[in-house]
Length: 265
Image (cartoon, rainbow, N blue to C red; front, side):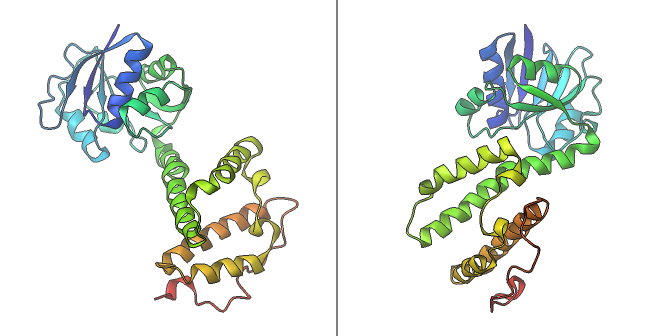
């Protein structure tokens, strides 16, 4: 039985602890909360999990008295192993799934999700015990990895926030677009983004894009709405241009008498 001590009972740490106990082979022997001493956290533990904010990982790790038998694992997606420097057995384990609360998180961690791992084999073993797919991400690639994860989750949610606002201008709720969103994601994963791309930018319909921009210019916070829309049109144009059947390149906004986004008051 692997003895786990958790430092920082946040959403990620509590989700992981509950998931590990649910699959068996792991038992949580203690939880260290904010403000409590951490120096002896490695005593009586096989694995010490640091579920603390990224900016605190190095300081917390340095405060723990090293124990040769204990592996110290952080859950950060962006940090490398160097922040765990005082410890001989160092590892990172980062699940590629949102963990909104421990109840939902514990279940999601056991659904075959991908875990980015590095360092001591204990991280890969935990991912395997949870039924997940472990992929190794070395320190020099952590920024690229975490940027991709942020785009895939946080930026997608922010984009759906824009969908909700613009849909509201048409008198529709966000859930009216559920089928469209889910199908687009499924197609992107099944066919690849190039094959899944549809819509005006994919077919070079700049007149429709012009109409979209005119409408957005009349919304509250028009500057940010246009900036977001223009950025996504540019990415869609880039994706379409990489396809053999893509539309001819050309300026999408040449028929619109709108000031550049940067100059909108």
